[in-house]
Length: 347
Image (cartoon, rainbow, N blue to C red):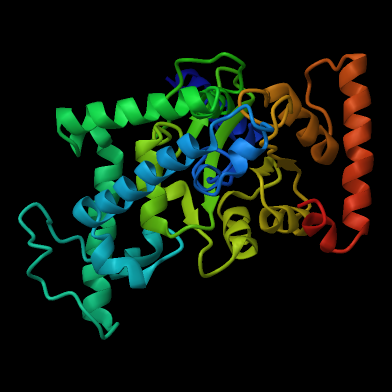
């Protein structure tokens, strides 16, 4: 029996050590003009990038359809009309005020939620956050009827065709990041958004930091089919606090010596914040032919950026990889030596 306990203890120790030795890659995503296209459809900048080969008016019409229906769903199903003046940076921000009350028979329309912003109303807001989190976890199929689901499928497909598969390619890339493998089609997010790679050495986390308000951003995740790969607790709104603060929270939440961060977005604010944290930043480019867009961006390319800051992993690097890594390393070092205007100057 003594030997059996020794073996069991050794297995437990080895398992714990293996978990500690895992490298966790945290991908920090911007939303608009990165994982989805909406603003650039509405203002015509997406079509302009194609020098006349895209029908700009069609893009505007698609963008308006998305915008109008997103706001409608926010109000009808996600309490947005009630709570839009109480934007929080993430859904769990009010957990300490939630007493865990059963909400199945709770009447959100009759609980007199209103100013002032006292403890009682904060608790009512926390209830709404919990209800939103539960809806998000259940997915759009449990929110909309068949007719509405069909409408969203049609709008998604129309937009995907117009954007040359930007939406579906971005979603597929999220899935690849989740598994750490090109062409992956089978990984599913765990409850806390952390995904064990098929490679036992890695874990992967997708985090969203959007400059938009929190509730519309969560609804966008659902409607643009990103919720399988981005857990609700990994969605942050920098609307009021700024991206540097969100990045700091993420570092404190996930940070340990085996965690690597990479920021992917199109804006100067996330570029500046990434430089401040000394994290790699991948700038998304709308222009056709760019490798930093969808379709186009690959895990290999993102791997170059990881290598610049954290060094190469155990995978063998070919000569092309070494050259690109050297170039990106030089560029990253140069950008850190300049002022924050180096990010703004690129836009």
